[in-house]
Picture 1 (cartoon, rainbow, N blue to C red):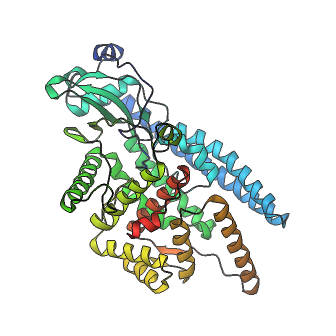
Picture 2 (cartoon, helix red, strand yellow; picture 1 turned 90 degrees about the vertical axis):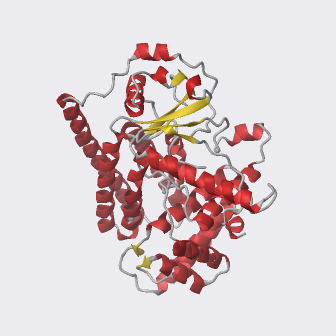
Picture 3 (cartoon, rainbow, N blue to C red; picture 1 turned 60 degrees about the vertical axis):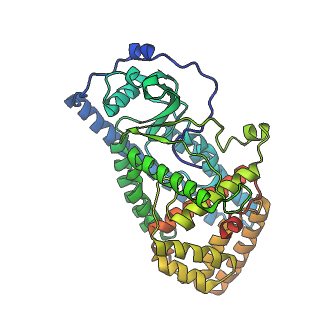
Length: 461
């Protein structure tokens, strides 16, 4: 599945596992209990957080000024050539994407990277699992402190020095358990030092910046979305929650397949494997789980070279998400929300109504979820959902459709009085935020894999 954090299914180049003794020579872990942080260390962390906040605010201001100036320039020097105007915006996105890439590599932490123009998405793709890794001695100390051990060889027979992947809040190392713990290849997910404080401060800054932008540009007021997202993100900082979520979904899928006695060819069969967390080696900042050898889902060239049918993989991923959303009401959208039974019914109604052009059903489903639209425009909402759902459209078809809609809107706007600027949504329930995130991730996955599978069709089964 697509996650912002590294998982246990990423194949890396062959590596020689470093011996535990060699690792300890590089930086021995302190005997437990770990000593409290010194006053100097706490002061240094506080200073880093302060300068981090200043950097974030100054970067946000420079971005706003950059886009506002470009908007004014295009409005002043009006052109009828939309292709030229799009090219100007694309260059601006590429220029700013380079800046934000450097900023995010420097900041790390946890920032929304999905709802951005394509130029940003392409530039920021490597931030999923290819950030610079943290120093090994720091990682070793975190593992020892969290697991209550004085050295790695109490638990691990071997431990790779180089991480398989490094993302915003954690990095993942391949290792092997000692024989007394059953042996076997495993992976160790380790949270970065002080990342929890960084994330909580970043969320505060993000909400403030979005609120300011919303006041200045009401059409770009994403406060309802950001507020819901920020309410769930802190849960990602506790790996015990992640391990429990993984186990819950795995057990539900296994039970579904067994009880239904479905064959792999049955549309109701959910075919997926999970890295299993080892309960006695899971803490708030460290999670040890079984190793599943394979390729990243986005490494489509390698998968096709192995003779993998990408359409078949995408189909099973969509089925897995459909089961999570519509059967157990609990799904992996990073972070993980849980939907109440009435919300599951409402989400089903929204999906089916969008497919059948049922405006009444769509509005009823949105109302049952508690969505409050500032603009009474169900057709606009219908278009959004249908466009998201139609993953079978290729890029050219989508662009042509969008151009027709923009032309129609322009003609309509000329006949009407300009409406005052105000945001589209007054209140947005969390469940629809994360439901939308799943649809967005599946759409992106279908496009990257060049798959003609339609999750809209598969989810209705």
